[in-house]
Length: 227
Image (tube, rainbow, N blue to C red; front, side, top):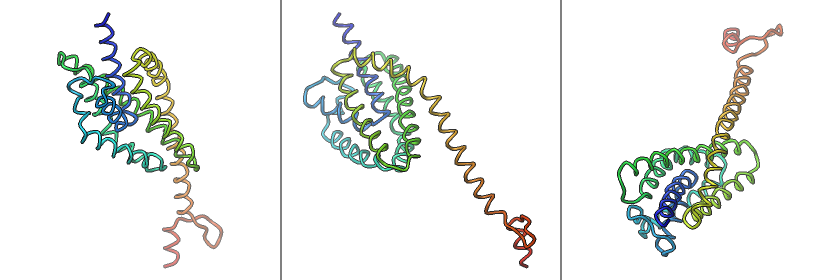
């Protein structure tokens, strides 16, 4: 039974670290490092580096930077875009490291699953924030950002302290993600199509003018008439 519980705890840590990194990598690393250095949890040897003061300090500094950037509409989307190349690879490394010193095949499998989960949570976060930014008021953006931070900190803590609860919620989250992502992608496509129509109409309006007889002419034809 103890071996089984150990497996569940390892799976929970693996998926919790990957899930959290897809939303807020720095908060995830900071929570793991602080819980490890305060002896609230025992990290696998391959993740003990997270307890290093330099790593904790760097994660804390970057968390503050992200906390600010994530509250500014437009800046948060640029930040998320850049972190596509940070969060997902970090999710792979954290998941692979969380399984500890085991068969390399197990570590690779954990990395693949962790990378997929990180990619899913990152896509949901960045896509949702992109649509939220279409609202002119900043309150919804701030609210979403704070809720994401709370979710990551609480979720990573739950993965370590209540692995069974976390895994049940994670399964429900993945099912919701499978349903949500195609609809999110459809909404994003509609938004960009809408922008395309607006700018297309503006460009067309700029190109057309009226001549002396009231007929529509292009700007090029108007220039010819002037000469």
